[in-house]
Length: 400
Image (cartoon, rainbow, N blue to C red; front, side):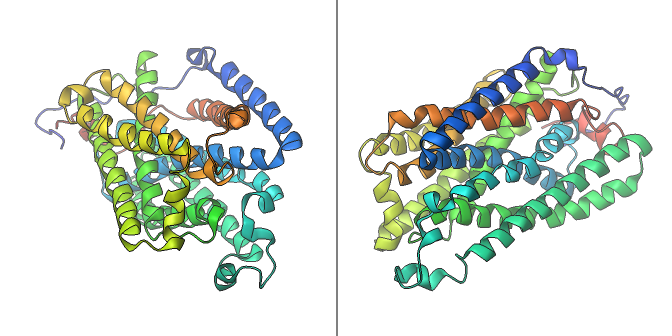
């Protein structure tokens, strides 16, 4: 909640000075180039491994930016004031959505190496024949275009309205963004669900889970809030966002805790229902990820994604001190592990393949370097926080 008991002077607008980025632009561009070259080598030498490595990395970063889009929509839909000071960084992240979706396009060149259903003729697989109304090339392309178009339009519209309000201070922008936020939440849910089905679940077209979209959403929301914590901290260390205080971190920490619990709840429910029903078409996902050395990563995900951060995030001292940054980094690492355990076992079915690590890392730093470099470009393209949002003063006076 916010404390309105005393007046406070609005802060001066802040613009990011590129010199404060230090070596980060060069570092991100170098990582992107090195990762791109490594991925190109993989594309030529081992195209199937390239496709799986690229999918793993692309979907990981997609969850981060679409999670940021969700938080923006929630902010406007609920007329929230606590997040005004940090919202611009969520908008800069969400602005990466179109690029993030476009990064999936190279995979279409290797679709038959990723998805067994892609090249299967009619009559070869009875299960696939029953799903061809959905799993067909034409409909797949149409859905991909819808993801790109809708996510681009909504994320750009929210960013444009927010930055325009910095100039004219018109309240109509807030009202329009509220409508976009209300519409954007179900849009985000549909895009995460269908993208998760198309790009991840379809790696094994026999397997299905009605909770898959919610599971991916839980991971995206928690990890994107964690990324926001690290970005805000980095900006504060460079002299920006001094108005962001322990109260704001407390709220962000509570959301991290909430989605740590929610991720575990959905993951356990999915596992429990599939285990209880014991239907072969459903159990295949967990049987594969409990094969050989994959079992260790699956168990590590359960222990370190939930049982480790959960008790730590329970305490206020964690949320209001530098400990929250360590928790945020840890959650981002666990989200990376989650995406790895989802994607790579389909290719290496008997266990972890160390020979593939160089291509996994190349894809990760290639995509991450590009998106990181673009984020720094967007950071300097507008004020650090919305300067004329009507809820700004309430955000400054936040009290939990």
